[in-house]
Length: 122
Length: 135
Image (cartoon, rainbow over the protein chains, first blue to last red):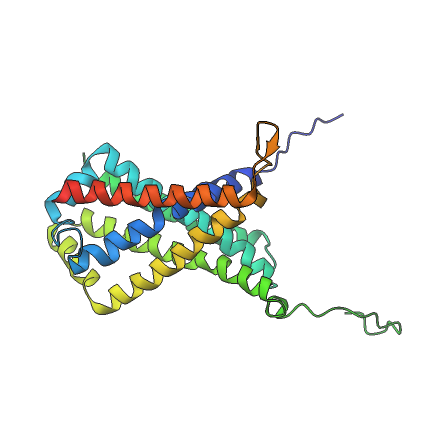
């Protein structure tokens, strides 16, 4: 008898969804506040908080690279998993093509981010 | 659909199902926060791209962030992602396995409160870190 070797890959996507959801819940609001409101308005943090030399140093440090990569990649995996299932709830069949489109977009964003962070040097 | 079937069984229409019940409307709103989370990830991705392209490109991105439209957009992102945070921890008691401490099940409200408290601690920690590093 052939052993059951096909395992579901659903837990991987669910895990990425859960990790991204938790990260967005814990750090999402404060990150949006800092990069999108506080820094542009020079409110609480100095207006030059995201100056070129500072952000260049941040993106070239392994820890800064890690933070940027994890935030962008996990936010995308969380969002695309949720969008896929919401489209199903709205009556759009979550078939193979839609899964490839949703998870493919998350994978593309992950790879582009990794590539850009590599290109920005160490 | 098989129109030759004379039985014509009742099929409950599914279109707009989520508009029938406030609970489902709330569910769809918290699912829709995913669009905002994705939008923010893409904003950051563009930022990383502009950073890799050099100083002039980066300063252009910073300038774009200062436009009133961008600040308004980020205010909407902040509202939606904060709502995601609130619903994420409110639903957490139902999405995680039952948690027992000393033989007693931890109350759902306590799990939600701990999650929200953790989010407040993380937010303050990041703010203090950024404030300290850029002062």
